[in-house]
Each structure stands twice: as C-alpha cells, then as structure tokens.
Image 1 (cartoon, rainbow, N blue to C red):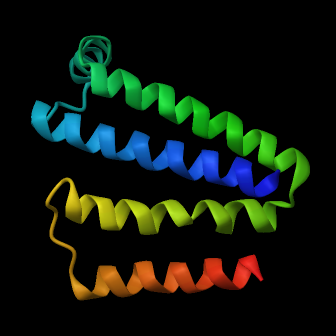
Image 2: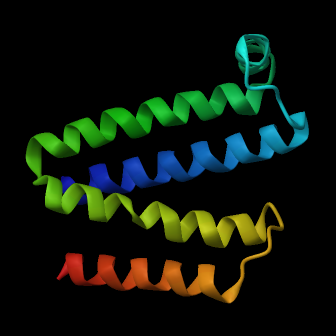
Length: 119
C-alpha cells in the first residue's frame, strides 16, 4: 500500500507542477504585490489547466498524508523525490526546456538514492 500511495503522490505532484509551469509560461510575468496575487487567484479560476493543477496538488497532499500514516518519514520524503526525476525528463520532452549536464547529473543522483531506498 505504501508504494501505491507513493506512486499516487509522485504522479499527482508531477502533473501539478507540469500544468502549473505550462500555464504560468503562457500567462507571462506576474506582479508579486497584492494586485498581482489577486490577478493570480482570478487566473486560477479561469484557466482550466491551472485549476487542474490545484486539484492534482490536493491529491498529492492527501496521498502524502496517508503515506505518513503507514510509512516512516525517512521513506516518504526520499521516495517523493522521484518527482524530481520525472519532472526533469518531462520538462525536456513536453515543455522543451533546456536540461544541462549538471541538472541531469543531479536528477541521476536522486534516482540513485531512490534505488537505494527501494532495496
């Protein structure tokens, strides 16, 4: 059950982050002040992928909370780091981001840590 909850949490996190990035790149730069935050809140309601991102983030949160009930934190946090790997690969493939050697090496080191965790 803990691997299923970890899978749900990681998948929801990856979807949320990809959707957020996609929509925020489309929206352009936003102001950080009170007006900017109000505009951002309105944008969440009007952009379906951004709203879906918030829903995915909620799934991720509740999956992580459920995971913490049955697994130690020392498993849950490093396991959830798998999202870094998937997000890096999917950012390259879907969002056409440039992934340098250092960033790729960092993602690979995270992968090594997750493999050690799974044993």
